[in-house]
Amino acid sequence: MNISVVIPLLNEEESLKELHDWIVSVMQSNSFSYELLFIDDGSTDDSWNVIESLVTSNPNVKGIRFFKNFGKSQALHAGFAKAQGDVVITMDADLQDSPDEIPELFDMITNKNYDLVSGWKKKRFDSVITKNLPSKLFNWAARRTSKVKLHDFNCGLKAFKNTVVKHIDVYGEMHRYIPVLAKNAGFIKIGEKVVTHQARKYGETKFGMNRFVNGFLDLITISFISRFGKRPMHLFGSLGVIMFLIGFGFAGYLGIDKLFINTSGRLITERPQFYIALATMIIGAQLFIAGFLGELILRSKRQGQRYHIREEINIS
Image: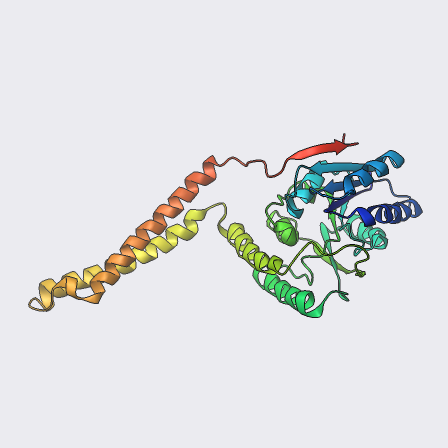
């Protein structure tokens, strides 16, 4: 199979049929063998019934339905687990991503040997104040932190080698940082393609301003995990030792000063250095213990199920 198209969705009943027909037209005109995986992330409208009708009319369509809204990352994780195509394409279900981009994305993966190609919506039709400016700030921070040189981390239109999606773990709200996850997993040939961004035709956006706050918090998380996730003692242990040595140094100075230099001076407990020494030694010990506990947790952790599938259609 050439292509798997993974489409997470939430309450997109109006756009699904049109998106399906558009994708099928592109696939047929390019003679691609394909599958369409619709992942219904707990829709409360008629989206699942539309998917069922599409499966009936097109055997290449497959559906996964969650019990409730678990989030886009979980939907992508479920789709990646089932994808069989050599190239995996992700896109949003709101018709703002153009299926006409698929042939060139497929070519960049198969012929130019990219591991991942991310779309760049260079010209956007979103609100400048509420979306464009925050998005530019967010992408700038992501570039500086991750060292992945992309203009649009959050673009839903991306293409992957199948091996990439099978070796990255998309969880929480980390769908924004799939290129960073791929880089951390060892897939370093990451490209970018300017893609068409279309104005929303149906419904309204599912993401508010809080996604940018959450996005920056997730950026800090992924930066920490990529550097210290496998060895937390390297961070907490190092900080603990430094803090403890600072405290020990102050305590040693106070002891020497009281015993040999200023024997008739103030009591040690009346000097501010005493409390600095006490506090830093306690903090240092706590940080060291935190690193030790992190190592123990890492070695005994069990990954819990992050979502629950209610129903599958045409999934082999």
